[in-house]
Image 1 (spheres, rainbow, N blue to C red):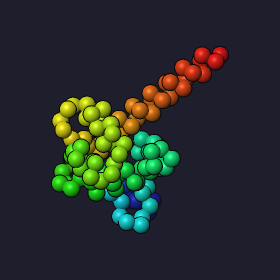
Image 2: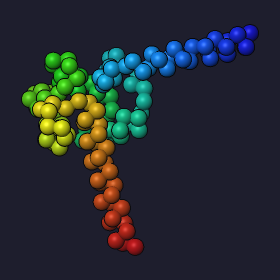
Image 3: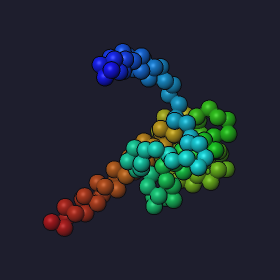
Image 4: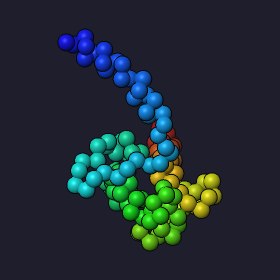
Length: 130
């Protein structure tokens, strides 16, 4: 019985890999209301609850709520209207390709760069104390 189960699981693997390779470049869907988000802050680039008032699920849900055109592209006007102040305040830094909009992935990349800058600055301070 176990052999049949394992064989059927192994037979499904190529199909799963093919199904994953056809995904679009759209941000993940927001979680259903009231449900657990799943991955912790480590999986979403570290949007911890204390950091600028956003948790990982908050940022994703707010991004989708602000993106009124539902195209995955958030403009500066949409960010301001939705009260996404960190995005609005740093929009030109986030929009590195100067397209006039940012994606959820652009925001995550900027956030990770911002964390890295703070960590490097702190490391330099610690080295100076030594």
